[in-house]
Length: 124
Image 1: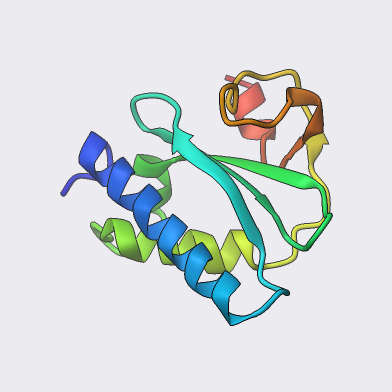
Image 2: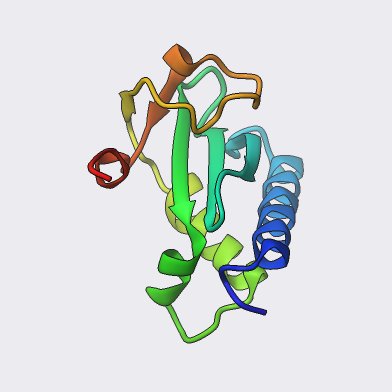
């Protein structure tokens, strides 16, 4: 399955949700996945909290480019595991509030999302 396909993006999101649900059942210290969705032809958006009552953090991934950073042709499940353990679970700290539409419709106001690693996206 190609990392730029719709099926790949949807399988990635399902795998990410499953990982988050599994971890939340293991204990209250697990990060909370608030929402995730496709954004454009190659991108997905992920909203989460690292800890209860923590800030809402957002990340945007170009899955095709992100997959290329790892082994050749990682499965959507492998890439979701990498994102979950390296980005969602790993302490991030704070991001920056941006006036972008990436998470519109996901139930969180723009002003409440701190985007992590978003500088690269704002340049394009």
